[in-house]
Image 1 (cartoon, helix red, strand yellow):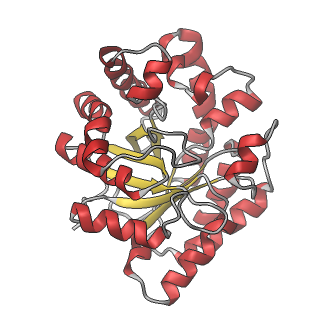
Image 2 (tube, rainbow, N blue to C red):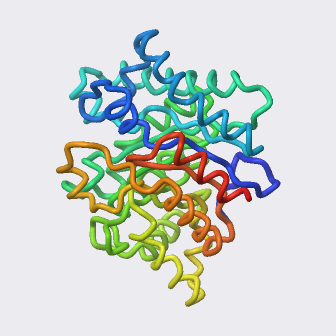
Length: 313
């Protein structure tokens, strides 16, 4: 059976933030080499930027009476990307522990808000394309550094975000399980609703569950617009496919552009704020167990405020 979420048993929706890196780069004017935000933790000025980033999201959660999942800023804090940014394994483990401590401090700043500290693991590769692949065993070994750091620092949840193929996601689940941390898995999809690997979303979820004894707390879709995957979910629901019930979180892009188009874009596409919120309301009808909602590339606190109003109405 799936591990229970470290969230309230009330079944209420939890919010999380939007597109951290796109907000910091395009709206705040920060330089984030390799799209990495974890270096901000090394300075007081960087942490102040993060404080300002999280503040309006926490305000929205308090306003609508939801809980809040606080992601660590560690999407790029894995061995390959860390090495590109000058971190050896010891330093990288410390970065991940520090990120958990920072997220916990953010949560403690709102004592009346129920929060969950979520250690974020990104893909070894780019996130938009598959590139070189690993076996699930290789992926478990690769992602164990972050899993062990999160466990040591007291993270309540670990999430594999923007996974492009099933074997890497399986490895993350295995690494988290070995470290004793509940884990969630998020796949990204192309405009046809299939993973960048070409595998169908349902098939990928079924493969992860089959090879990990369904230990993942839940699955999520991120870094794609709802128009890219809503019909896949709806068709799965209509056909009575059990994997749909495992999708309990959504972090969509604001833009309807493909990954390739976004990669080539010079500016930020914020899309249609209310239109995106309306899509979330429709997804809530397809996904009866939807528990966590937030945003991905191009979304900011205005998108999440509109989404919160749509799904908590």
